[in-house]
Image (tube, rainbow, N blue to C red; front, side):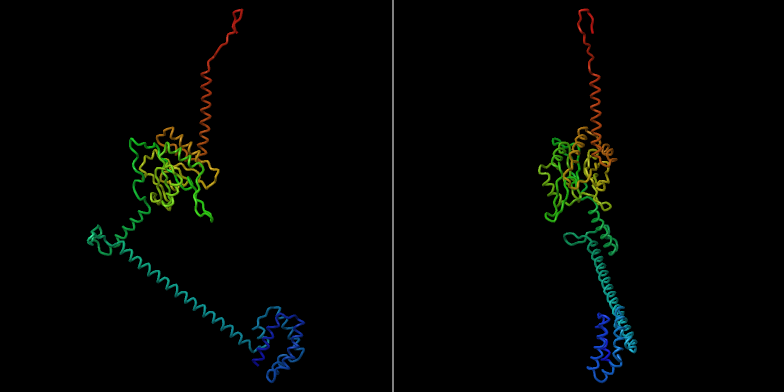
Length: 399
């Protein structure tokens, strides 16, 4: 009986893609094959299943209809063998339980791995904390290995180590957040050397050069149009200082190539800045110069937020070749220097209210030129002499 059921099941699985007419023929052929091939129990089982030719045809029509509905093999088997429906349900239930057990085991393994990971990280953190307390909290020793007493020597041992560690952490934090030295520039030049009357502080990135990256060349720095003429003209009246938040290993080679004539007198990099609220800020108080004579040219307002009145903000240069801002900036700085302004902060404070100070300066220059021309015309009109022409006449009359 079991073998007959398996044979019928294989036949059913092969009948899924047959047409209705094919199923009629297939049912007849299967009946004849089962009658000729099987003996004994097999033959009687096939006859009991199909009975006669008409039953085979009826079965073919039934399965054709069921196959169009995509009936699964266990459902067909339960229809053909009602006594096996309970076995199919039990098998499905066992399969479901097996999957649930495997999933539960996998979740348990994942939880164990997670606990092990937490334990490893926790242990590493504790070990690192102990090492930090010992390394940064141990007392200093002299050349002979004797402990040097400090302000924490009279405290309990554990407290000593913690306090020294805290002091060391504050020291390193101060190194990161504050400039590396109090005086960023040396003292102004004394006679007989000539100290320029004004100090011009320039940002390098996107003011003098623009970083550019491609797959073929990698990182390159593009020189801004007119930068050579700008440095040459500004060096006549200004002490030029480049002050940037970039690293020194990047800045120094670029400035060596950008300024072969040495117009830039000093170079200040990231270690000279203050780190405030996630920004590298240029603190002019450490510049060692009179702030009444200091002009900062930058595009980033966060970098100069400690001294906004000393800042002349210009538009950020992004590498376009038609830029001419440096030429306009030369005119502004020359005008400022020739006027011998006592406190540049008054002038810079006026231009802070405009989104484009350079454009406003050009407009002011145009208005000033018109006023000067109008004044010249008025002076010429007032100074023009009144000449009377006398025409001689025989009658002695003038005309």
